[in-house]
Image 1 (cartoon, rainbow, N blue to C red):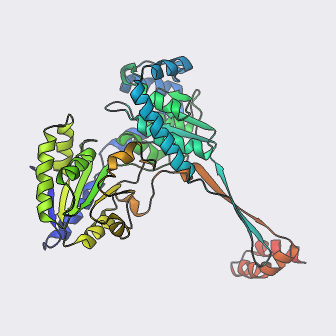
Image 2 (image 1 turned 60 degrees about the vertical axis):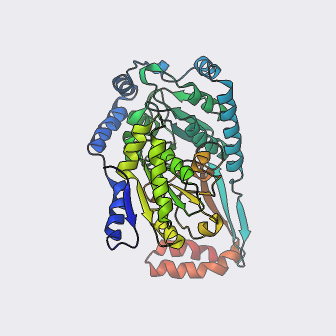
Length: 431
């Protein structure tokens, strides 16, 4: 293949071609489910011993249980090696992320209705959360901040972090981000075995109530398999961006934003949707020029050629509808009137309005969370927030007169359902 898919909505063959583009995000990776099932079973049966075995096998590090967790001294040592400018960037990002997520915190609800029944809703944090942080090809301190800070803002008492350390190498920036986010319980284990340990516990690592954080296909499959025993944030797929652009957009800016997603990995997807055919050609040419300059050009080119697309529409209204059908993780609106177009968007994990709000700023320092629904799940899912670390409990209080006002209807419904004890439970109180 010499370039991305080219689609035009006016072409008779558009719908089959667009369906193929949608299906591109649904390709399963063969063999992973069975392999992960075996790893989880081993961790449940053997505990620490399985973690030791898999860590030696996959990360080439022989650990003992007393070496699973980083010590306070190791954390301090790692943090001390982080360059001052990077530490300042981490601090700025953390401050902005915390401020945005504190603004999300909900209030309890209490009300009394016309019948005199008191009704309410109370929010409380989870007791414990497990945070998975990728290692290996790349390490992401921003991911630590985005996952840990909302949990801490929500009031979660225990945050346990697992991060693989291949060949024993600890990523100092990741540890510095964890310290800034208030995480002190850090384990140097990764992969599906870490997810199993967080979900079910071992002799050394206590189980948690919810697991959040991105990972490779094995980590994603492990989260899928442990869901139910423990909560999860989502089953994350490869990263994706959709840019809607009009004639006012700068081709080079659009091109580099597409490549900013493509450089994540070969499975990432970058899509341009525009009613301007000349802009489409200019962006395609700019992508080719910029690819030659990127250190990760091989990865970005593979992503662009295998999964990328340029879609030419009749107008911006049609572009908005294409976006709604794709329900992208990231949506950039590089158009003359971003708010007007954004009003027509129903499905997107996060939106970036105008030329000076590139998706990359949202990855790091804007404030909203960068953990977002992928693979069209933005149709029904939202990005990570404090709500992922809170539970709602409703409550009801009533006196005799309030129960008398609404109880007879409940009795009649219980009788209609054949649940006599339900009906009597209310009737006995009404005399």
